[in-house]
Length: 133
Image 1 (cartoon, rainbow, N blue to C red):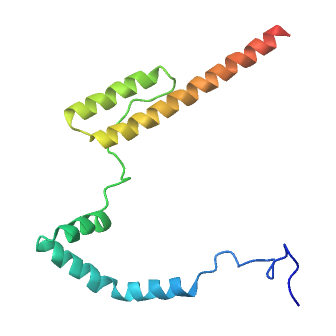
Image 2 (cartoon, rainbow, N blue to C red; image 1 turned 90 degrees about the vertical axis):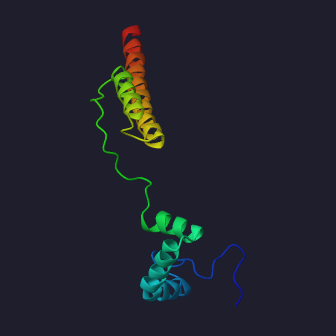
Image 3 (cartoon, rainbow, N blue to C red; image 1 turned 90 degrees about the horizontal axis):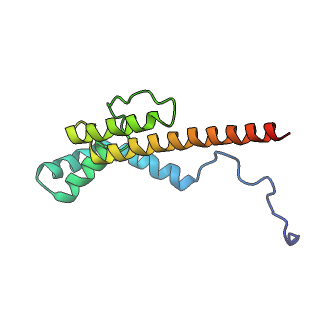
């Protein structure tokens, strides 16, 4: 019996969390071969092979998204963001943080300051609306 147009042969669909058999097999094979592969990669990196060295550093010792050991002043208002930004710039100038870390921290401070400013502006609008009534 053919399916009606727009009707699925399996309306419930694939079970959530079910995995493809090929993916499971590939992961199993890699898990079994991981130690000798990583050992070979490290051996190539030791010989100065540039691609192996880059891969080893990127995959074995990733540096992205690690916690930054840098203390910012407390930011409770948008005005406090100026001091926090000054601290970030000084930390960059002193070599305590990298330019990439400074940019990420500055983005967090900026987002926080915008959020506070938006909340303050919203409260002011609400107060104006109440006072007009």
